[in-house]
Image (cartoon, rainbow, N blue to C red; front, side, top):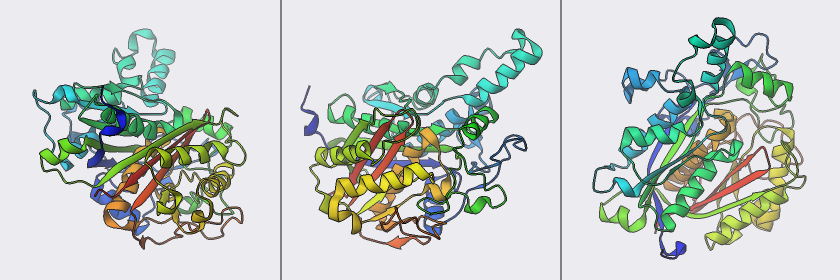
Length: 416
């Protein structure tokens, strides 16, 4: 095997199915415009839940990418993942055929997988009996199916896996795909995250944990990262996918290059099931490791797409982590939480946020943190409040943190 650092990895295709746009162009325009994707829950009757709002994917038509039979046999999260993957492949003008299929892999993370199917089929079991449970229940429910189905529908026969690390899953998937290409195990990887957890059980659980915003009468202002008046996160759904390629492979086919993957850092707090460790040491270490992996200094960082969940614990601790990792540079960079617009996609969040970070580098524009009206005194960085900004971005980081103490930072840079 060649040395893992000998191969450079670039991004040549992007796909997105999100609460503010069902393709890359609409998603990116929505971010720059500060479009809000949060509204009343429509996917189920949420009237008895404490939280009745969500950032749902709207007007989604899987039949643009899948025939009716195939779409019917997929949970919503897998539909999102397969459709966003097909977008990324088309965006890259990438062809998978018998000559390269063994060198093209798929790695798509998710937090919970087919929760909708699990709930509906359990209801069938209880109310109608075991004979009424669909024979597709298990293959529609299991978390690896976004990755498996993407391979089936694209012909990618290379490395295939699924990360299930809560809200860090999408970022772990991208980082692990990066490593596979670096190590010579694949020439290209379809990678990111997908989630569709706007369901009754999911909401009941998060409401019981008092994790969700209950600003039901004002949904458009419910997701407010770094704001003093934040009261919890807003659930989102969707998928963000990147097509990564080994640099020489991309150059040989004349591919456009959005940016380069520079580094990958991951740690664990080893502290609590749901709460980050006070002070953000684990998150800070992930940032430091990503920079070291990419041979980058804090002075080179221009932008951070924050995990920024709009919860009391995350936002202040993430701010501390950024300051701990970057030192004086933290006050000179720009930071934003696009969850203010998209809500929190759980395992899908790292995918769409990596897409946003790469687009910021490619376009020298940074999306805002909307709903930031009364800044928390403990959150004292430049969060690009309420309006996007033209800004030179040579190096951008994307942070993702998950239940269980998982911390991931991805480092991207301009290709040169």
